[in-house]
View 1 (spheres, rainbow, N blue to C red):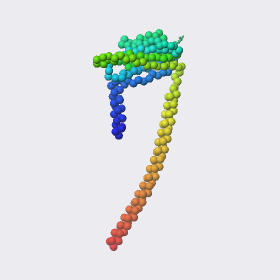
View 2 (spheres, rainbow, N blue to C red):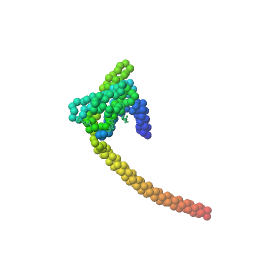
View 3 (spheres, helix red, strand yellow):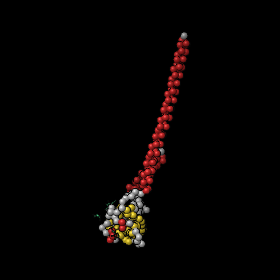
View 4 (cartoon, rainbow, N blue to C red):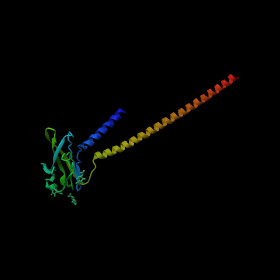
Length: 221
Ligand SMILES: *[C@@H]1O[C@H](CO)[C@@H](O)[C@H](O)[C@H]1NC(C)=O
Ligand SMILES: *[C@@H]1O[C@H](CO)[C@@H](O)[C@H](O)[C@H]1NC(C)=O
Ligand SMILES: *[C@@H]1O[C@H](CO)[C@@H](O)[C@H](O)[C@H]1NC(C)=O
């Protein structure tokens, strides 16, 4: 009982904390884009101390498959976004934190993905943390390896987990069924036993009552 209460309490706390601080969690980006479609390049860096005020600017770099160096492709700061690389001209939109300089989500959206977009992307957060008496500069970077495919494929992991789901559902149901049959048998056997016992008890009661009556009759005589 107390374990359940503790669990509930911690769930409530987690909910409260996440509501208060905008629920930042560092989800990894998808890594497979479909040619001709749009794709969100995810990049999230949560502040270690959510209560500390901060401001950040973001840079994205790209290294195409087979290339040796990263090229600067995109910048986002208080003035908005700038696409630096002509390969991405008019094809990128900000998908990160909105209406805030305190950027923790620096995701960008690529329109009309081509096979040339395959490669490695790197996002950089340049974050200035403002404490009461000093400021602290941190740089965080994350890497996304993007593969562009002609058609969406399903990862083996998702197929395996779906199969496992069905197996476990069927297994659980079979187990429930067996348990039910077992319990039913046990209960009906116990019921019969009880019936027999109560019949016996009744018979005995009647027998002893009649004996008493007989005794009474005998006494009266
Ligand atoms: C990301 O940007 C694209 C294009 O502007 C938009 O369609 C999409 O809804 C955005 N997604 C999020 C989560 O902001
Ligand atoms: C994407 O491609 C379609 C068709 O080729 C075009 O109509 C559309 O304007 C393109 N969108 C962007 C943002 O380039
Ligand atoms: C892809 O790159 C090749 C070589 O740089 C170029 O010739 C081609 O036009 C590019 N394709 C697209 C769709 O940008």
